[in-house]
Image (cartoon, rainbow, N blue to C red; front, side, top):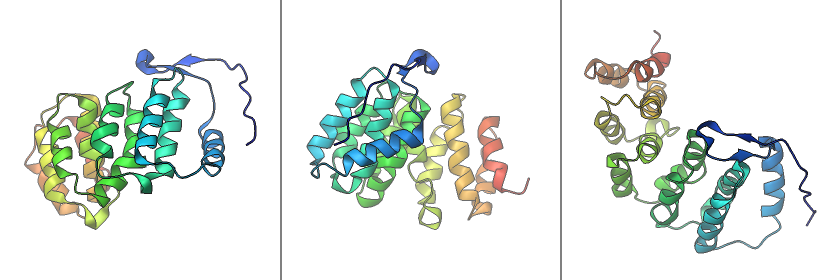
Length: 210
């Protein structure tokens, strides 16, 4: 395996001082990580969970991103309990939109397609943790006509009076995705939810021709 040298780089804090950055750019990081992942034996679900948790504890933010890269690369090896056993923990540690959304793309979206995860998504949507709320609201993004609209609208409805930016933004993005293929449904939801924060409405309306 090619040696990866640790070169001192200027470190900068993330928003909310979650952790420090080494300064490795995303394309470079992903190239390095994929090269490493291709050289190792296929890990088990337990090994992936333990490794992700260990990476999450490390000081620099790139290690949390590396955990997401790893889970995306090996997502087919993950079992039906992985979201509840490990991802829920990761979502609530060093939480910020970048890691939460990266976990959504890397593992939450594919696993909720593969396994029946509605009970767990219900739990996350009802949680007092805003990042679990955000993950549940967004977990169907990109599914187009395969989206369970009743479920999505219920999750949005549960937080329709929220003024928490990261939740209202998630609602807006989820509705915007639906508007790409079902404008009437989104128009009706907006009509019956006048209490929605302007952030959510503005995002939702981007594909309504307004």
